[in-house]
Length: 334
Ligand code: CP
Ligand code: NVA
Image 1 (tube, rainbow, N blue to C red):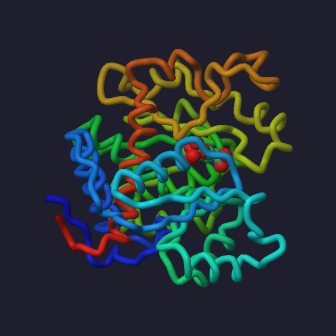
Image 2: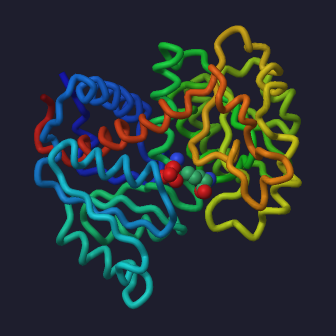
């Protein structure tokens, strides 16, 4: 049986901090159930006639396609709207666009730059709005990450995730909070300049303390990853920060995830996996990678038995589906 919590009905998701621990775990459970249901060949109608707008200011392969297919699988309709398609924030304020789209759609998934735009959409549209990535947070990603960890290790209990790279980007911010809420120890390995924002760190630390797990920040990656079960990284230059490319590569080269760093966990023969939200620079030759072949992760690690990145990317669809069903399905359970 599929079950979801009453408290999730009609809910927006701006960031993970606004969800209780129980709500987060319920969403991961529901995603696993929906995944099994799809594997059994069921295409349901949990989002029957629900219309979802996808407003995207930034590029996307996973979030866009996961959302569109999650909605279609369950009998709904998704509409992909990019900045040139609509007046969003140009000829029309975000507030007006929100009020217009809220009369037409049942929900909005937003990917863009400003967290405040995502919040304005939620405030003025009157329908649930989900943050599909802003400069500050990437909450939908974390449900997929934690589901993948749970599938691989059987449970989240006692697991330590070490995030290595740009410790203050959108993925790192959300991952830190998601781990704290789901009782997973979190280690951030990054240069001093890219440490988590003190306010974001303090908020996650408070949750970690309540849940009896630890959050630690290390500047030395080999020291930081000791004992870790998951090595996680993301691009060194997030969308919108392209001007910082040369500086970031110089700063983050010592934080590349390679087999040496995997070995430094001490878990190479035990409980160890590699995750990356993707897209990843591991084999893709561009102007910036031509001298080193890879940036944040080597091809050897990316293609190794430890790498669960394609399970993780598939899980984007099941977890986004869980979020949408919880918020929009008129039934309580099936
Ligand atoms: N991980 C992720 O959000 O991927 P996309 O940018 O392709 O959506
Ligand atoms: N930090 C990355 C995540 C991409 C999914 C970015 O914002 O570009």
